[in-house]
Image (cartoon, rainbow, N blue to C red):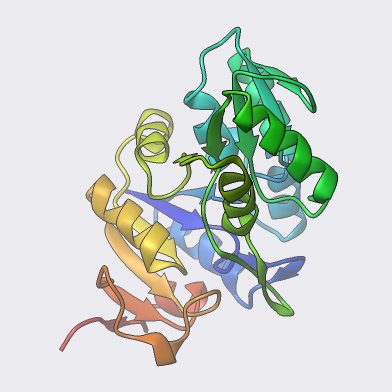
Length: 252
C-alpha cells in the first residue's frame, strides 16, 4: 500500500526534522509499504526536496515527490507564457511543461506561489499582467506556513494580495484541488493513506483520493482545535507515534 506524507508539519518544520519522522518512514518501508511525499510548498525545485530528505536520513528520488508547482504547471498549455511570482520550483515545473517563464510584462498566465522574495515590485508586475488579461493561478491558498518558530504567512496570503489588486478570482492547483488530485493519481497511482497536518488540504485530498486520513498535530493543527472537518480516521501527536500504532481513532 502507498502512504503519501505531507512534508511541512509532518516530516519537518523548516530546517528541523520532526522527532522520529525519519525512523517512522523506515519502519513503514520495512513493513513493505511504499512511502511518497507531496507538498503544497512550491518554492524549491524537486531536487532540493530530495536532497533535504536525504540529509535528514530519508531515502527518496524525484519520482517520490509531488509538488503544487507541478500541479499548477499542469493547468497551463505548453507553448504559452507565464509570469512567475513564485520560487524556483515553479520555474522548473513550467520549464518541464514547456511553458515559457517570464518575470515582467504581459503573459498568458500569472503563477503565484510561496517565496520569501515577494515584495512590492513582484506584486506590481503580477498585478499588471492580471489586469492585462492574464489568467491567475495559485500553487496553493494555504494562509500560513509552519516553521520551527511558529506560523508565518503562506502562499495563500501572497495569492490573496495579487487577486485583490488584480480584481481576479484565482484558480488554485495544490491540495486538495482537482489538479493535485489528478497529478497524484497519474504519478503515484492508488494511495491508501494520507498523513497531513491540515484537514482542509490534506484531509480533503485524502477523501478525494479515497484514502484514509491520518492527522498529526506536529504542524498547523493543534489538539485544542479538535474536532475538525473532515474528520480524520486517526489523530496522533506526530508521524512517529502514528506509525507506532499509538494514534487515537477520531470521533466519539
